[in-house]
Amino acid sequence: MLQAPTLMQGFRGLIYDNKTESMRTINLLQRMNIYQEVFLSILYRVLPIQKYIEPVYFYIYTLFGLQAIYVTALYITSWLLSGTWLSGLLAAFWYVTNRIDTTRVEFTIPLRENWALPFFAIQIAAITYFLRPNLQPLSQRLTLLAIFISTFLFSLTWQFNQFMMLMQALVLFILDSLDMLPAMKVTWLYGIQLTGLLLVCMLQFFNSMILGSLLISFNLSVLIARKLQKNLKTGNFLNRLGKLLLHLFVVLCLTLFLNSIIKKILNLKSDEHIFKFLKAKFGFGATRDFDANLYLCEEAFGLLPFNTFERLSDTLLFYAYIFVLSITVIAALAVAFRNLSDSANQQSMCKMGKYTIGLKPDTAYNLIHTILFGFLALSTMRMKYLWTSHMCVFASFGLCSPEIWELLLKLIHLYNPKRICIMRYSIPILILLYLCYKFWPGMMDELSELREFYDPDTVELMNWINANTPGKAVFAGSMQLLAGVKLCTGRTLTNHPHYEDNSLRERTKAVYQIYAKRAPEEVHALLRSFGTDYVILEDSICYERRHRRGCRLRDLLDVANGHMMDGPGENDPDLKLAGHPRFCEEIKKNLPSYTAYFTRVFQNKTFHVYKLSRNK
Image 1 (cartoon, one colour):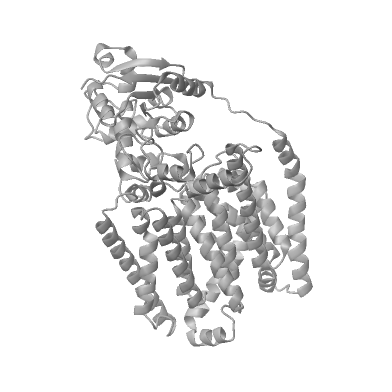
Image 2 (spheres, rainbow, N blue to C red):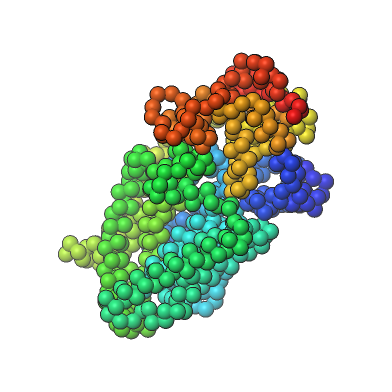
């Protein structure tokens, strides 16, 4: 956008892009969530700042500024829940002292989640305020506007938005079913989710992955089921329990039915790798699917490591969180049981403005939110950043909440209004003093460190590509490396790390045959079918030791191809010995059968670059 002569030409270049993927013209605005970069480029060109700040620093400072808004949103949410600014201060301190587990922005700046999570935090703060009883009409309308804008921006900036909002929709569904939230407010929130996602779908040129999302099917199903079961919240305990189970069954069936119909109409396969991964991860049958196993073997998509809790305990966050969670869960169970047992009495309390006793609607929402996102984090480490930041909010709110301390002191028969006041202020202050004493010096030392990027082999490779290859040359290799090639050299690629496209996933698997046991003529034909001029082989992949046997890239390819894996260990009985040696190893021997198709043009300790012959 900055290199284009005009903004409109830059915008057109994104919509009709033939410089990213070889032999294809793609719409980058449809395929990827990059509107934030488009907005920043417009801002940079319009504002008179070009003389004072380079584009890369403008980008970095904007993202770091967004993280400040993120922490502010956490501060406000905790304050709204507890009624004191001290709670917000503690939440912010915990977020910063636990930054290894609460954010990835300091070492991976341009991640989509670093753009999206600040808006998600603003949305949670707005929902927390919206769920307060007796809001003035103007306040309610302004809060709904804030929820809509933050939901829209969150959805626009992250491709996994639909899955996070599905979790949020499940929170609303659970609380609505248990009569712990006002039904009208829940309906508004369902509507905002749908509207925000559909608006993003339009801006992304009707991206089929959004239209086929489970969130749209689920929200529509809930609204239809509520119309069909109008007397859902009447009757005695067993009667209501039976109706709830039927309601759950109807919603589940409707969701699956609508989703399958939409996907069949759209012929949607963009997100099938995610469902294959989930199916294999939760034990619904082993899979040899290359894409699913690629996720399963990555540490980021494994279970949350136990040492995470050790780090969180070191700042006292985990202990405080478990303490607050235990008390609120007990209160929630008691309230839910009472609501289901006595619907008539519950209706009379609603008229009086008391939605729940012992658990306010905003507290109930944040409780179920932290539980569901906690399960998500425990099952998939990559998603822990959604949980740990909210953990800071929830733990700090509980320690400063008069309702939590009142409930606890009443349970142990020590209730006294003065004691509540002492506990809700003294304990957070003591924790803040402890955090300052233990972590402040280390944080100051860390801020004074100046680190420098050092990867001479990669720098040498990029410099060689820039100096010795045509500007329109097409490169093949691993997804991560090719992303760097595009960024540093602007060359065209066969594949790249944006995995939410079925045809690109198929391309990646085909290109990765360079690390499989295939004949040179087969590999050459595959690469040339994508217009490849040069292929980059990495020793770190060819001789990989980072993963265990069965999870190395070469093993995934062997199993997917029906070949036996290398090294000592068992193989499935139906796997066969490959008819050819491993391509990435054999090509380095310069045998005539390989040099007829590939000529080595660059080599260092890490990378080997081969030019492909144009012979058929």
